[in-house]
Length: 278
Image (cartoon, rainbow, N blue to C red):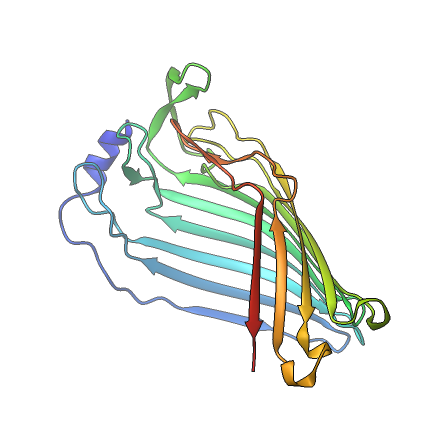
């Protein structure tokens, strides 16, 4: 069945529901030595205002999320470690219509599952580290849509129509990792000054609904510096300045692709800000 057949059978001009009852619940247990296991379950409902190429409204996006994890606060240390596993089922997930460019179609039921790890640590009074890693496997769990694969060199489709069921959802990286550090220099060296550094890794993504080919993964580096004016005078408490450079190496990279277009990432960028908190 083609995407056109599916759309014409699954949608109509009747008004779609705009409200629903959703709920969530969770439980966490704090053990004496700093470990806290938890569990949560939630439902979701999001009305979708766009229409397909025939002008038919899409059914609301509904979902269910299950999450289980552990949080560990190291005793007598300002260090928090977390680990969690999740599964999310969403129905009426919108995807690009491969037949009618510029429109979306109903991708059926999509399942996302994976895990996340994170660390938030004030290693010392002046040195902080924040790191995280996530693995996400998101696939079409129930879909009647079929499509041909695309040859990126000729921009032509080839082969027989294959089912999207079980295929990875496009434009969603499977692996992501980031780390950020911040260090405030000792007062006898540079009173009020601090330096920071970060790295971001984003894994490859598929370009269409039948895994024709992937974009390349990329790594970006960021640096920055900040200054606390309260070190000059107590009257300036709350006044801070920051300078930063994102994509330090000015890396050329592609964030994502669709069947007929790719999106380039932002090049090196300098920015600064002055903030005052009271």
